[in-house]
Image (tube, rainbow, N blue to C red; front, top):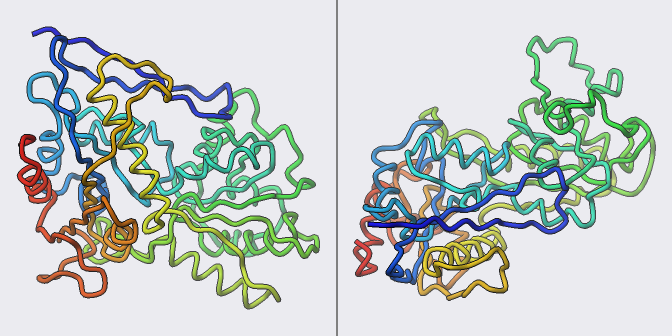
Length: 385
């Protein structure tokens, strides 16, 4: 049987010329168009698909059922909707592809910080500070922010800004300058004299004491530690999870816990309360954005010959969108708030371990594993099993 490969380049408005565009490849039948799926699926990652870097149960097998057996082409539009992050979507897609054994495109990875790119028009040329595990400044630079600096790097320009630094024996890798601009070892702008216009918590912070201290300095000084100003720079959190499921048997404190700590301390030392914006699930915006991406994937699957212009894509609305998650207060609450066409499925492989449905945020369906969730969906959607 002959197949052809259709490549589509995904363009992002206002992106830096240095940012590489990526293509999404869909292999389709040469002589027959596949059946158009009227549903899509969003998977949480931690606690559903992976525990740490290891697959949970037969999650790779469950994902393979969403691909055509013969061609390996994507049969059902799906994406990963996670509050996690810390690395660019392109790298996360490559990691997931390797671990799970299926071809995953960056378009299918929506992380907690993915909406930050929507702030580029206002902050592209402004100094912004990014904190979190992984490479937060690299993430922001890939989105097109030209003056994104990690909090590790930023703190290094201010002597004694972290009074506990001499007592910290660990070292923190600082790859942001090298990967953002290999020809420069220091920023081309003066970090110590330019005001920070926005601070971003891209992923779970590593050094809470240092980050809270430096962020408080930035936020109550108008963006320049040591100065005085009534203007608070913008503060953004990629997500607000209080807890999440990792490798350790019990839940770990997440970004929401860090936000509570920062807010409590800031409000205790400043006469005005902290102003901030949190993204990530259960924010309804996240689910609306996921629906839009799934519609793009649906068109790529069903409309063989398309080009890179969104205006030429034939968009068809879904009858059902399935959210598969392990955290009732995040995944299930978000799907319930989003309303039609979202259908929530709660697994017992992560944060939730109850025998019955969750009391406060009951799911439409409770299953033991993601394999059971996929089996339920394919059986419910006749013709795709």
